[in-house]
Image: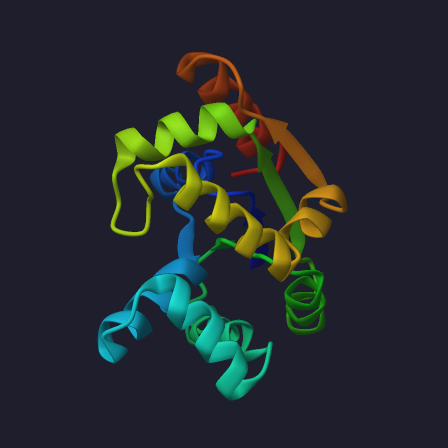
Length: 179
């Protein structure tokens, strides 16, 4: 079984990669979903929880919870690819490499203007409808180290054109990795 990580700032297009990979049999483990689940339990925003978890349990907590979840999934030999969505720091990358021998990172990049417009349309609970809130979220994400992950990823896909072109790039990538 192979474990791959996906990184990129909010609205870059990570979810489409996950969706297309799932259609081909991949299992998705979203670090964001882990934080959202914890935020719901705590009655906090996802941003507060992302910061508070790290303050309370150290920078490794979300990675540790993710690794624990993947180890359970590894027991099923039918799983050929597990994708970790939402990696935000090089430290997380190192932890995953220590735990999964063939681990690699795919990053998705889109410029700020496009990402903001996409998030306004997506309108998820943690998606700001005003630019100031959007920008603050980017700064928080960059503070976690997501820019370093994107810069040092094994593969980078630029998502700044139409949806059909982006789908073609993702399809080609999934074919290249044998999924």
